[in-house]
Image (tube, rainbow, N blue to C red; front, top):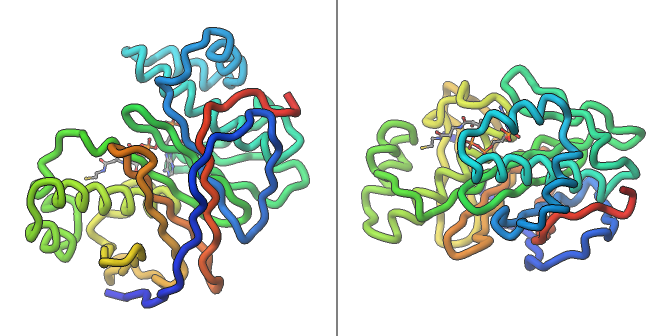
Length: 269
Ligand SMILES: CC(C)(COP(=O)(O)OP(=O)(O)OC[C@H]1O[C@@H](n2cnc3c(N)ncnc32)[C@H](O)[C@@H]1OP(=O)(O)O)[C@@H](O)C(=O)NCCC(=O)NCCS
């Protein structure tokens, strides 16, 4: 297994609420994370506005959810992606066109004169989040850490042997925290690669040290250069854990700017 010994600390801004119509800028040395709780979004006018943003295909998917909570989370996720992109570019949220990759990742089809904009979305019980950047692979995963899991059983089935061994030393809350730490890191990498679970989760491993650095190590079945990848993790609430993966070959760590708030119509809309 390969190891990344880079010890420079990632930059992470403190989450804060943002004005809904403010414009933001994106450059190739930063990536931005936006997150919000769908449960805070109840106002019918805003929910109706979100629906107007969806493509026909997204409306079909929206109509297929059995549970209202899942339908609402899907809607807020799609609105968050579209409104987030429009915060950085002079395009209305409803104008963004996404094309699904071979493994189902929605990718921005037209960047309208900008560098290629990359965005990735994640949702879990009580939270949606996306990461946006330009010209690089990005992945994000958020999980509700109250979720009932048999950590050791899942680790044995899906994680690498080094991760399972590390988890076996832990009990109680420490085990739960470490399990979700591995899970979100691994999913963020899988999502940055855009290939879903066609990359088996035991073909790469994370080392979780006492510092806040997360290092990926690749097994022989899935070779890669650990130093090319940056991982950042934080807890937006006491029971949510979020990991971001950024591909930044040949560069120092990028700054991660975090924004929390309910997505509303941006200035251009
Ligand atoms: C689909 C997958 C990419 C992420 O699924 P997930 O973690 O359940 O869901 P998330 O909410 O984090 O992400 C879903 C979003 O990722 C995006 N997405 C879909 N396919 C993707 C892909 N191949 N790569 C990156 N992103 C993708 C979509 O925007 C999707 O949202 P949408 O369905 O509203 O369009 C995939 O990795 C998967 O199926 N994971 C299974 C999770 C699991 O069982 N892990 C075991 C850990 S023990």
